[in-house]
Image 1 (cartoon, rainbow, N blue to C red):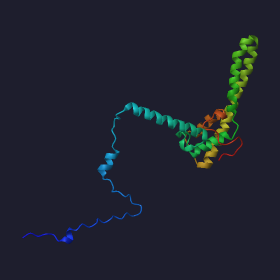
Image 2: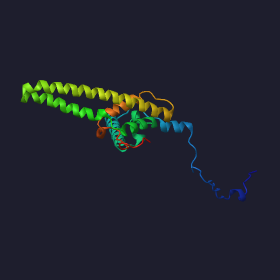
Image 3: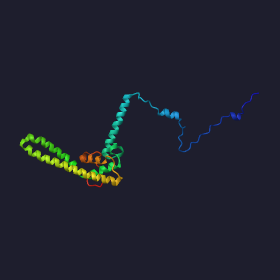
Image 4: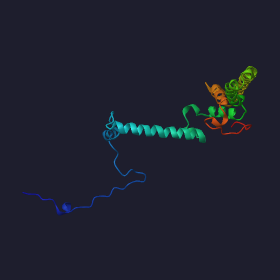
Length: 198
C-alpha cells in the first residue's frame, strides 16, 4: 500500500517574513573564525616600496599637523612635550612677563659682530671697546641669572597653587622658553605681555 501526502500539505505556503526590530544590524553576527580572518594581515607586507611610501606620507602628515598645532595652539595635536594644563600654565606665565634673556641675546649678538668688525677699522680702538663689551656682557649674564631665579620662584609658586605640586622638568621648560625670543617661540604665545595667566 502506498501512502501519499495529502494535498493540503503539498500546497506551497509563503515563507514568513522576519520582522526586524529597531536598531538591529539586519545581518547575522559573524563567527569568531570569520572575525579573526577579517583582521588577519600578513606580517611581511608584499609590496615593501608601497608600504614605505605610505609610512612616509603618514609621518609627513603627522609632522605637518604637529607644526600647525604649535602655531594655532591646538594642544590635542601638539607633540607630547608641550601637552597638558601644567605646561600651558608655564607657557602663559613666561609669555606674560618681559624676560631679560630674550632681549639680552640679540644685544650680545650685536656686540660679537662689533668685536669682529672694530679691529678691521681701528686696532687702537679695539682695547677700549673690548673692555666695555666685557663689562656689558658679564653684567647682562648676571642680570639674566637673577631674572631666571625670579622666574623660577614664580613658576614654582603658580604651579603649587594650581596643581598642588611642581612636576618634573616644568621649571626648566619655562626657563628655556624665557630664553627664546618671543616671536620665535613654539608653541606660539597665547597671551600678551602683562595679561594674567589662565
